[in-house]
Length: 399
Ligand SMILES: *Cc1c(COP(=O)(O)O)cnc(C)c1O
Image (cartoon, rainbow, N blue to C red):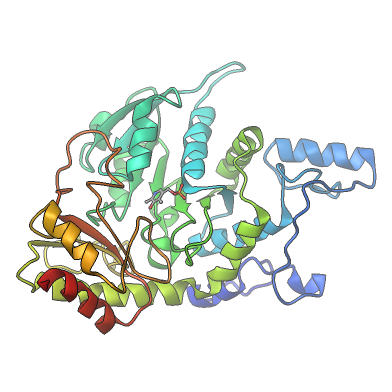
């Protein structure tokens, strides 16, 4: 990384980021190191390196020692992702939920004062939010107390003992955009974690708006091919040290093979995201005009970006959309009629997926459904031709 010119455009950065050591290694493609343990030349060196890593720093000349502490292949992907997010560091985890869990634990740890301070236990969550994040924060599994609010209520929800504000934008599955600078202002000094999975660093870089920890489910667009489970947090050097400590203690490491696959996909991430976004925008307009569709949720739809965040915070309306048909029966019938689009949860793959939030992904969320009605369907637009996708949707809408 250090050798790259610092005026590279994001697309060029996606191609080259995290590959700064390859020439010195004498290789062109990304190397994959599957070692779980590493030989050390001297005990002194290994001890020094171990101490550095336990404190959240990079390994020294003593080497990585053990791969739960450090993996060169994972670290290479992390530096690539950090470059795209414009952060000093990124820390990768075995899944998006492992990344979110680590972010919360790191925030609690960071809020601890004194020798045996236990840290603050209160979290503010901005709804709606990914169903499993909702469940994680509400369930008490992490020993937290959560106050749920909407994007305008953060200031009132923050307390003396709040260690973190959790927000997601674009919001799942209604694709509302949340003004991150406003959330950071309301949080008044309490760190903000933003789940930016739906935007990817191609369309949004939350750290530039004051967000402390930017979380992604790498399983989605960053992986991009539906074959890797992963998570990552992009952040400052200080936050990364805390997150690495949590990762060493909890062991939710990303496998080097997964890191290799994620890194291999970074060069095409901008192309994939923009192509899907273009198709999503096209389909949103066509769905809006169809008589069997009562609502379309996509920031490109008139009235769906009331704060004007496309252009200011997001570089485009994004590749995800939701739409509403009459009810559960119609939604079920539509999905059964499809021959190109696959009924499946998840998103960000090469192929288009459709799912039913009320029945599946938001099922575990607390509270009432709001816009998440029995007729709501979420479309994760892939890389197929827009006409083929539209003909497929018509099979379901007109059938
Ligand atoms: C999928 C997803 C997660 C969870 O990620 P996993 O990799 O499945 O653990 C979190 N947030 C959002 C917005 C997601 O789409």
